[in-house]
Length: 140
Image: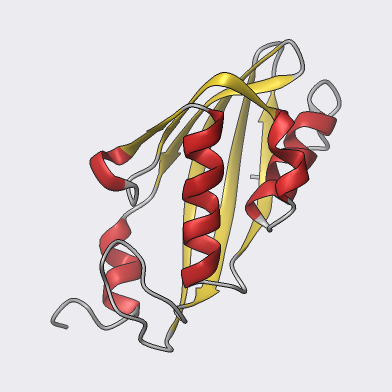
């Protein structure tokens, strides 16, 4: 897939990515009723702006160098699809798992719903077992 420059949703998507990278002042890029369908979150979902910010803060405490690199993107009037690579080093507890000092890299895709200039929803598609294996939590 060839990368596409986002035009309609460039600002909310840029701010949303910055939020994942620790710029918490960008929390307004998500709606109050935001929902993330995130395989690594407890119960697989995060509901609401405040809960999402808390989730990202917890993740960044565990993986302080966590980054998401968007490899490709497609958009229409109300939706953005991205293919991305996530990377990080496990330096703190996450979901009850002690830090390992190991790094991970995995690929995934996300579907975003955008309305009124804000991210309303993200559905992430990736295999969290791939991360657990790289961090040494699964038998190889």
